Amino acid sequence: AQSVSQHNHHVILSEAASLELGCNYSYGGTVNLFWYVQYPGQHLQLLLKYFSGDPLVKGIKGFEAEFIKSKFSFNLRKPSVQWSDTAEYFCAAHAHNQGGKLIFGQGTELSVKP
Amino acid sequence: GAVVSQHPSRVICKSGTSVKIECRSLDFQATTMFWYRQFPKKSLMLMATSNEGSKATYEQGVEKDKFLINHASLTLSTLTVTSAHPEDSSFYICSASSKTSSHSTDTQYFGPGTRLTVL
Image (cartoon, rainbow over all chains, first blue to last red; front, side, top):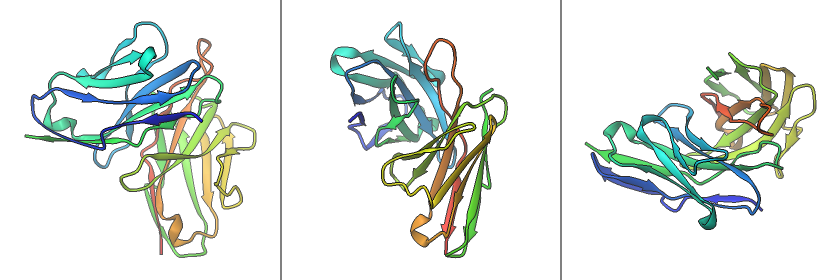
């Protein structure tokens, strides 16, 4: 069955540190990949998505992610985090034959210390 | 664009009563809406997929008679929790998407969620 794994459950960083959150998916066919962010008390917002083309995807708020097909990975990165990036981050995937169903990873809680 | 609203944002009800939650796509037509349940410190669990004008498709383990889903129009889907019990207390989130010509499925846009507390 298709699954998405996020290896980091809770990441604590100081402001200006670099961020990389891991995401791996298990599906051999064509997938679309997403990163969503959920700020405290708010709803999920789309950070970025990969459908096809350039495997390095730029998103909002300075985030980017790289799709590495050989590693089944779609890690999220940001060169310098801010206190306002404190949130829960979810990686998600859906396969083209799954009727649009999104499979979510477990989520990674990011805490940025000012 | 791509705003999804949910109503109510919070609801408290007595055990045994039914609660209806609305999900609306405000500025686009949603061919498909999804209902999720999110537990504290947990990921989102897909409950069902709802296509306008047809019956919802429920995920394994989700009781269709307990969680009634109606997708009456391209901008509105409702989730009714029937005969609610304390274990149904949770955060329910809907999302909406619309098909584009270039992709078989499109991005999902999420509502703000509804906090249900069953006493």
